[in-house]
Length: 256
Image (cartoon, rainbow, N blue to C red):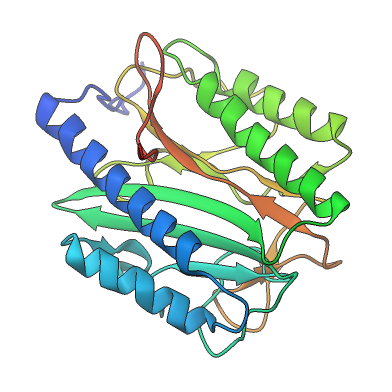
């Protein structure tokens, strides 16, 4: 008999309300950043806009709570994740990934989006569309009882059909009263030994990283920035979703 106590994923109405609020906050901050981003702007200025809206909504940057030197992760071109905002000037044609995570009254939210400044080339459009659809596939399948490795299989098959690869050492994860809550390290590719099935009350941040040829991320010029060994293009979209017995609830969507 296992001595490890199984986590209780059930949520009270208060907890669900808190997670909805934090999801709404990070989605709003992301929306404001996307509306503000322009060629000629520095990544630091874009991050300052995020800081303004986080403060306005009485939320705290989750990356800063972990020692990250910025309110948000802004990853440009060869930097695929954990990009540090700074003096880098954004230019037309840059691929920019914005990852916003924050805490509000003890509950966390997490959302991400990739854009190309000044329009899309044909190849970039295909990569971004595949990455977006991979995340939406995972979100749509997030109903109670669904095996996690079947969701991962669907992500992997969709990615392979598009002619791309998955960054295997960047995982999806649970979200709750911490940014990386149980279940942690959810693989975005099929693994036969993964036995976890989704349960009502689980809150999952799905964020597969899709690449034109790389399968692993590696540290770049500092302890935060991640790149690939061959500088392949990478795109990521992220949503936080509440698992229910029925239709999953996306917590990081805002209605306009």
